[in-house]
Length: 162
Ligand SMILES: CC(C)(COP(=O)(O)OP(=O)(O)OC[C@H]1O[C@@H](n2cnc3c(N)ncnc32)[C@H](O)[C@@H]1OP(=O)(O)O)[C@@H](O)C(=O)NCCC(=O)NCCS
Image (cartoon, rainbow, N blue to C red; front, side, top):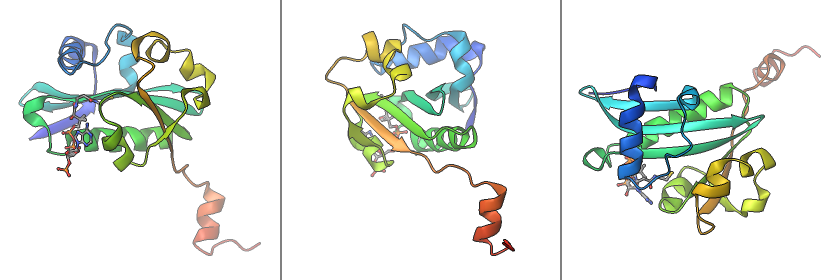
């Protein structure tokens, strides 16, 4: 069985090894960043990883990788679903990413290509934008469904007396 959970500092070597083996950047990953990372574990081994780096109401989805012998099983889908749900709950309105290899994958998840210049300044300032992802990488954005307020929920349920 595959378990999904918060990445910890103990997972860092396995995360870095997995990302490197998938050709994804690792140079800027710090233990402090892991708060936004999830791992998928199978038999105690890290077989998948994905992370979100928030900047205000925007966030960068990065480091989505699954070990080759565990691909096609929905592991990346589950990791991204959980991260998107968490981001929505945290009030993130837009998720951005850069990819050289998986534009089609993220298009299926509702991401659309944009010009890099359209990404928020705080994300453009990250190492991933500045140094680690070549200019040929595609920048993509997905608007998240913000959670409804109590009042909106009430109105939708016909409970609003006003
Ligand atoms: C992209 C990746 C994370 C997908 O992981 P996964 O756990 O196998 O994905 P899922 O099981 O959720 O989805 C599998 C589906 O996505 C499709 N898919 C996988 N990689 C794809 C890609 N690069 N482009 C388009 N579709 C892709 C598969 O064909 C499969 O389709 P199907 O369900 O119709 O058969 C994995 O292939 C990977 O680690 N790639 C190398 C690292 C990478 O490119 N990461 C993304 C950049 S941040």
